[in-house]
Length: 138
Image 1 (cartoon, rainbow, N blue to C red):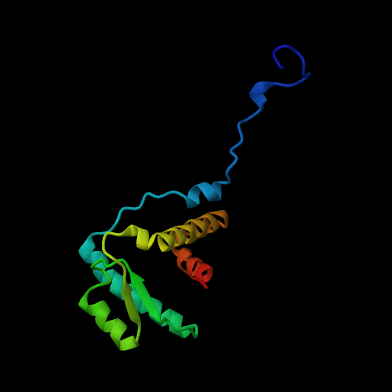
Image 2 (cartoon, one colour):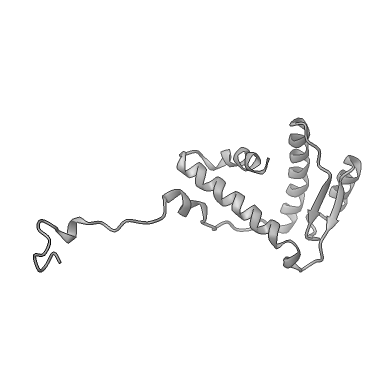
């Protein structure tokens, strides 16, 4: 229409292509994290579980059960002993059966993506995301 003169004073080169997605949404869905080595991950899982339990207890809540997929990071002696001492029931789904924990995997991914998008929108560093994800879960 601009080339044929149908629309007056319309210059196509002045119109920029707009992105229909906000920058925070795009940033929140990026997935370029490598998985840590399995041995290091197992020890950090036990430590993180103990820290998470302390935070939940400090907020006045109680963990009744832990559901895991039967991975070695949750099925080891230190985690088993910790759960037994705290009275937490450990429920294990069948190994190599992602359909048994597909719902929670999608829920976790949604929480992480929305937290990353909100942090990016507010221009906060990623290390602030732990508190953001905890607030979304509660």
